[in-house]
Image 1 (cartoon, rainbow over the protein chains, first blue to last red):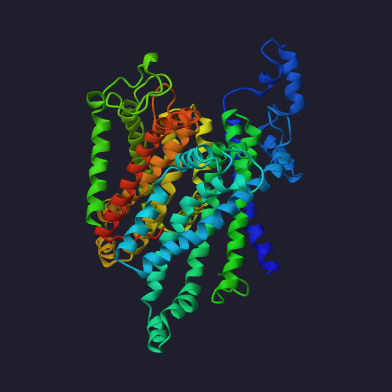
Image 2: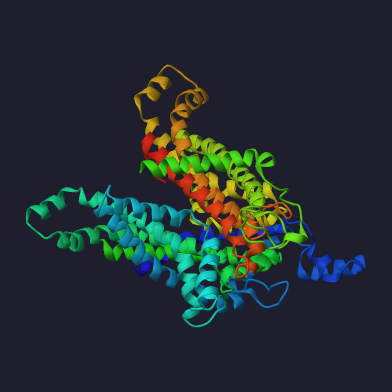
Length: 310
Length: 267
């Protein structure tokens, strides 16, 4: 298992290099001279040349890129232009909050999506199915930021049950987690519906039925087990979409996580922050994909990951 | 699902027509500031109410639809064109070209799409063209993937073999034999994607990266009006409702098209 993880990690190095190169090239191609913004308009050309030499922007592109990689290897991502705090320390401070939010969203999305999909599949073609698929289309189609604002105005401002915004104990987590989890509960419902329906049509279910097993036994012992794999896939993919959603959700609810951090970086054109967050997003994605492969290994013995390739 | 399908087709038609004929049907000038009638709740005079500068929200929603639909359509066609070109090449030639292209496609698909679009829209000055480019530069990848997969299956069919054996050139095979086979797949997939593009457009506008004020867009209206949500909730509710009914109808119609043409979409 450890050998497998190491192999996967080494395979992701070219991917990460590619992403660092793209983000670096993007930032370098932006208009504007950082030296000019550091010293101001009235500095003498000699002074500007001096500073260029000191911070190294007079070096060739590749040399600057290698310098950036060196910095990353040391576990640093540069400093924010505005707060002058290292991007890394902001990341370490804010990422646990986003992780909490994502977990909260999953706790909301998985049971609801799964029950919705299961109900739809067991009542194929009947009104319950239609209602469930309409709800799931709605969940995919509705804008996250709008739903968030409506939830906030109803539950926080009208009824005053929950705090409207901020970061803190679990009460601050409920509304953002529901907002973030809603689209993914819809996609889980869709996948659950089609897979449950496919499995119910397979011969082994007929065999189990012929043996006289109760319907609930069929669902719990045979169907649910087989639904796990596509469900894990979709949940893993959704975890990535939480990073999308977190940008919007955290902005609306004033939640102190990396989504809002990224967003503020973009609005202020704080490039070290934007670069660091894009790179961090890629790292999170690679790690999630790897965790998913490891989970597959445990829930489906047919998919042995070590021993042979795929 | 008959009624729901008809309803979504009807809603989408209304949204498209009202965007096309916006100058004719909108009751007020969407940019006209009227300080005598600020933050008025919905009434006969202003069906969707007015905003903090007294502008009519219905008119702004109608004009905002122009931006959203236009951006989604252009981004969709761009994604389709690039994805079709790349997918045909990768699927037909296979080998190293295919591997290289699919590596890039997988890289793009692996990344959170909104973050990527945000990253791209930072480079260019904010505006609708930037949003189109940002959506298309992420969107082409899923088209390329679906089309490449489809081309891989039809390339093995006997009519392609026949075309090769009578000496057709590669270009002729791609344009005259493979391309026509992909048309219904492309249209269905475009239908399934458009709703998502509208959502991305409104999210980018919400974040301030889309069309700039005073031009109204659904996303930017929600973003600017959200401070008034507790005192004047209609200012946020109606633009969001416009996004919601448009994307829901588009997604329902997309599903309908998929079932009708019975294309297998394995993205």
